[in-house]
Length: 306
Picture 1 (tube, rainbow, N blue to C red):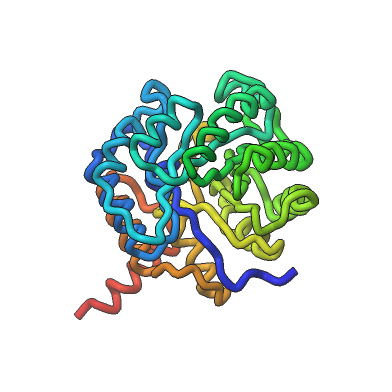
Picture 2 (spheres, rainbow, N blue to C red):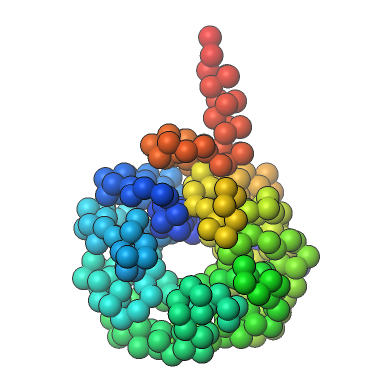
């Protein structure tokens, strides 16, 4: 199968990345991060989540973030929404796209959101209905597509089942997430092939965590399967709560470097994104987890030295 000539990147650092930070990040910093990423040419920047502050305190001020955000025409600023209460808050914040989530693993669903997979779909029914009524775009996440911290391996057919359920709710696209980062290229290709028996590849996105250093390899495997949408996080922001000390999301800079070397267009500027990754890492007092970003900046500084 031919690889795509152009890829759409969904930047999840301001939400999936920052929600894993141990300390709250200021509204001003969150807004600056989102606006800089959008200005770099990234077409979608997940800007927040309307979830319980008890469980995800880092996203508590998402309404203030959206209120202070200068939105660029043509850029999407989706928000994660778990239920009707979250949807009401998103509507009040004038969000135009929401993301909802389910798990391919029954055990993870029970542990993470205290309900079965079937119950999670039933709960999302009214959310999807109201989203449609208000003209919101709906994107779906399926977590644990390659493995579960409680069950171990997850069968690809279970991923396909949950993907179909989300499409049935009206999701325009399904993002398949390797939540604990255990996937390897052969398995990821099998997952895609299985899901694609029911869904066109044009409606499948991939979301990789780099826990075991397989993120970029899995992106390449997905490209070989014709996938053209990827979630990623600037500077590799995020973490894996089931593998303490491990890296989280695959870094946007690492994915962009791969795509650039393959001649695949993204519409975003790699060096600008690398600079943003360096800035947010320094702001948060953490190590920049992007290898490509660090290398590009090191080369830039070396070339600029007298």
